[in-house]
Length: 263
Image (cartoon, rainbow, N blue to C red; front, side, top):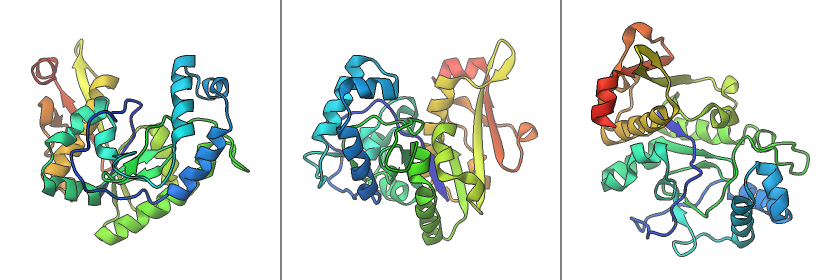
């Protein structure tokens, strides 16, 4: 079983890494090619490309210009500790013990516009490049074209090593599309999180993002490898709604009272 997460725009590179253990991104050659394209763009080009403010464009232009290999603990940080934001607040990697990190390294993957696919301990340097960005590179008109089936190929090899064919999709649609899910022959499980508001169950983005991280944490800390055990997820007041779920789409809901108590 592999759990897939989206990356986060919010990063933390000021704190020292929590561990000296690290691995190197497996798609770094393709990342380097993208960086060379980005280094040829001005700050205003980046602002237009990414639809961001001049300040954010300038920051990322500086990041692209200073990006260099090889990655070390002096110029990079493990992905699981570098990403911040709602999902990663729920994941709470700083609470992981060594056995949790070991399990995450085998079972958790982070999709990335720049790095393709990251393992938790893969070193990365700061960047912003969303998967939906229409960055043209050689014959490719966007990042989906650029990564093509290369991400899925690695996912399938990782699943083969685990003797599994199950993906737990906790990524956003923007990122999950990058694996070309229609070409995956295994089993895809989509957990869905809804909160009750004004008497109606609905997806509330902030809560749903945090819940994705919480479920990832639940899977990692409990060393879960079966779909049936995922249904036992109960953090932050969520409960499995069997009646509203299907084989592939697992719905988890909670009441307004539970949300106020747990978040």
